[in-house]
Image (tube, rainbow, N blue to C red; front, side):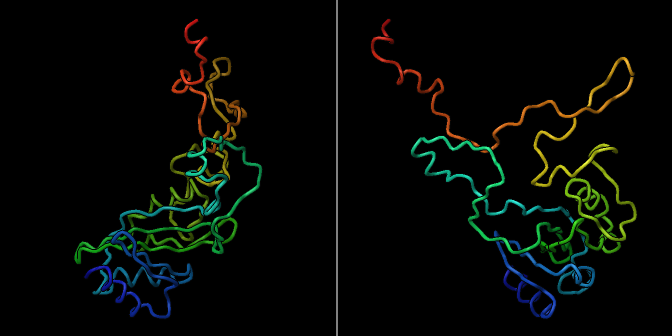
Length: 231
């Protein structure tokens, strides 16, 4: 079935369950409450009209800075004013965000019917927690571990929920928007102790918002006076 037919089928089947269903770029996104996740996921896999028997990917999303802008890109570039800033807690919201900070997104494929679906569930709380779908799609095992490692999202009843990308002693979750880009610690091998040691990060904090560069070599000739150019 095409995109509109899939949306109609989802709306009819999950009339009292879905929170939102929409299409973008030819792919349908279905949003459900986390309390309905296991029920909806099972039906998406087993219902003849859907047959989403394969999970392609699962990932976490952090909406902490969604709709936040410290500068207007087009205007700043056109006028040449520098737009580099240091973030000090002040936020300018272009869009009000009234949903939980974290979400989990599952990308599903129906090999039988040749159709795809994006399943989204928002997760509140600290730490955020949602049911694991590993018993429905076993391929999600390492994807859920990755989301736990990088975003700190817990998956209830996961058989082996532990870090998969960062070090065993790593503190924090590096894909969270409030995690410092330079990190908190750095490690090196100490020859005298003959082991790897951890130390506070020595990198200086930088201005991370892009800015317009005005005084580089492309404009050097224009800045020179005629006397300076000839002398």
